[in-house]
Image (cartoon, rainbow, N blue to C red; front, side, top):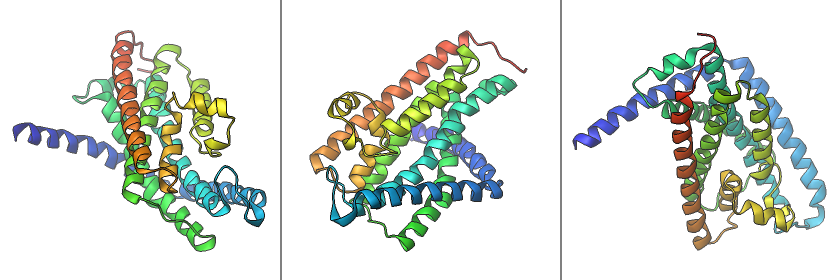
Length: 273
């Protein structure tokens, strides 16, 4: 009971960091509408592209037009999450390093990794509740949207996918402690993940040898597995196996971030402070 109370106390401390980021995101109303419009336009362009490709009831690798209509909408919303994790973890860590703010955060009696994670999670909550919900509602009214085959399983898989990406983003953020300017690494990582996670196109449309390689990497676990669960393209046993693999990758990447952070801090030279 004592340990549970301590855990709850610590958890509430970290959720305050999420709340701060959530409120911060609410402050930029003009930016909210600009980004929302940008992503809606991207989704619309993708919709008409796939509508032309899958006209007359055609399918590609098991994907019909109604599947792709939902796919591009959910993928568009997931790009909000990618942007939030890239900016809220990797870019923020770099900014704190160069401004000198990092040293103050390292002195706080909390885990820096969890501090960064929970701040990003607050931003993700904002993205899902406002931008994501708005996009999906508009899309459902204008074009139509297939409901998830298993909403609960999809949410669990999506949460694990977010944890995997958070682990990668934290590792990318740590590179700034070693090379100082990690903008190139951040750009390359974000672009690669958008492609290799299936956010741009379903991975099944890639060459077979590429798909085989991706089976041994964490990228498809970020978005492609959750969207397959959403569309009902995985059986029960496949879903169970996928969730286990997602959990393993989330754990491995988080531990890797923890260990590399400990090593990096010992050799850290703060700028700006």
